[in-house]
Length: 391
Image 1 (cartoon, rainbow, N blue to C red):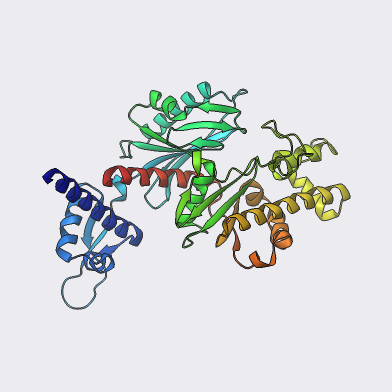
Image 2 (cartoon, helix red, strand yellow):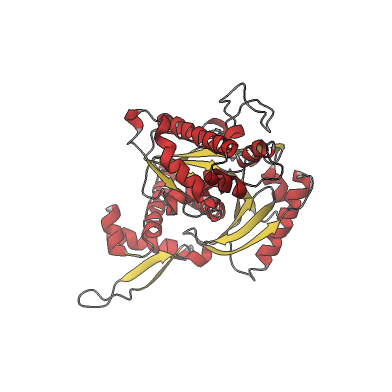
């Protein structure tokens, strides 16, 4: 019985520390009196816990610069950001980005490194990535970073095992990314996550989806994917498969997908699929040129782009009816780079919506662009570190 009581007491202490730390983190700057009021805790308990957090290097206490009333200004608590910097990685087919991210998602420093390997083999790419991570860390000149690194990768990711189960973009099957990177950098643990889920985490915490409990992020670019936030948390689903909509077969008589199936959703709206169709008409035509020809009224281009917009509207309809979110947020290279495409979607996305769903959600566009993957990688690293401390 005494052992059980000891465990319960320790668990309660950690829960209170986590509650108090999260209160400080959300507020950026806050007094002990405000914390006590927010979480209904005695000022004596707040003092004791904040002293512990201070000794752990998680928070700092300083005098307020704002005078309120008579007497000395209150002490203000804030997160000790210098002790909680994390490294994030955004791995794509033609490049990767390594960045230093603070606890509020701000990218302090980053480096983009091109990938020119003809064969995108994990046994070549991942050791090269580890080498560049080490060089980046050494370039920080002794600056403290967390012993975890977040890695965002397109594809189906088993985040618990740190394994990419399948990435049609990379042509990878069952690649143990976490263990390969850890072999090269044993001083770090690695958190591997699907890149669209990472974007969703960044947008939900600091971007266009902030303040919403339920949202869906739809990525339209080289690949097609979605991520779902339910009650403020990312929804992974069984085996982390939630949101893998790019390979839903939407037209069994359609086009061949890079995954080997016929008629996957992404064969109708992904960048490579659009260009494949366009190049069958005019060799070497680009997306920029396509939108120019669309505005000129070129018939075959109008048919192609209208079809892409139509399938995008169908996808939005599927997501709206499946999850009934407060917002659907569009991201990806097609959204980032082509304002005309955004305009066409905005004008036509309600085309396939049932009347009962039309006014349930708001359509928005991403805030951070390509930086979201790096930000999100840092955020998941920070969150995982806190979970290990407080759980």
